[in-house]
Image 1 (cartoon, rainbow, N blue to C red):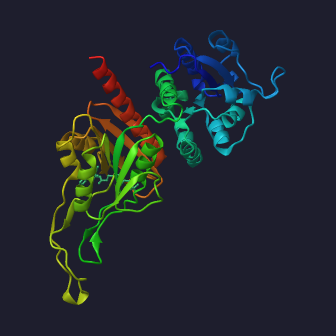
Image 2 (image 1 turned 90 degrees about the vertical axis):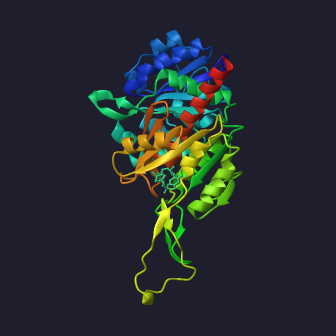
Image 3 (image 1 turned 120 degrees about the horizontal axis):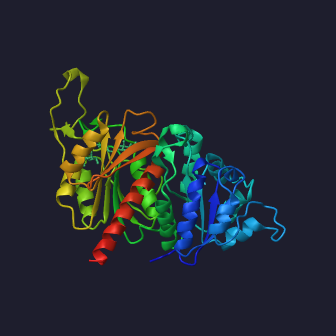
Length: 409
Ligand code: PMT
């Protein structure tokens, strides 16, 4: 369905070197039948002329909050837009939007609109990974703003790294998805999603257990993101976190309990996300009473726990998407690739749990997504919610293209 035809898209362009790509984005939107109104910041005009957009867009460029013909241009733009797209979005525009500072026509329009907003960041890696930008993006994601990219690749000045504007084709597709879903970005409506979260606890005696440092944040971020996109969510968790409106929460402790609960929930699930830190070993014979020091140092014999991911992979129903994780401390890509093929998963989300601000208990994470068809997708240091968004973007896009291929057979 061409969701762009006849739609009014405000195309915001801010002052980054990638502003030249906004011209192609404009052309693609117009070619798809959208009505494009360009809104440039002053900084953008240092990189790209108004004339270029005047020639391509459906209306002339607007820049000023003070317009002879319309005393409230930002409100008019915001109220009549079907979508507000900002590409590229600089750190300044992202920060102003997150803080509600309307210092120019573009930021005022962002705050005035109730239409879906798609933000496409582009900046140098150091800026993209600055805590302030990470927090601002996390704020916007929490408010339902859809963030597209950035990618990793060549940057201005010959540097390489995260911060490169996504491709015009991906950006235009994301706007289409936002509009397809009636603006609610509910591109997972009708899907049943099972997520596991937290670290399992394997009893030594009634008081002690073998555990790990998983807080459950990454699992809950997936559950929140999937729910915000319309999915029916079941979370199998060892930790209690703030209530997840509308989700089914199944509390477990041990790997065995998680295995049983996940197997049951996964039978009907469209997507399963194994973000939990499941113990690989457990005591063979946990004591029924608290072990006493006076009895000396106990020798604890261990045995393997059920490999939940492997059994899900072995019994994966047709059409189900299985996302495993890999918590690594070295050779992240190599170890993750081994898990991908060994467990029968469609994706492995690999994270180096010794990396700064990534892995256990942090609010941020940095992952490498490996797909079973060989694609890899690095997601630089981001909030765990944004990591979840990036992975689910990939899952939704792949499921949609698979469905389209089936349909056209
Ligand atoms: O919870 P946080 O504090 O936010 O931390 C997030 C995280 C670091 C826990 C998360 O990002 C993560 O890496 N989760 C997977 C941790 C883990 O158990 O990784 P693994 O490489 O040991 O296991 C690989 C995969 O097999 C995982 O999907 C795991 O859920 C699964 N597994 C592991 C053992 C087992 N017996 N059964 C399993 O299903």
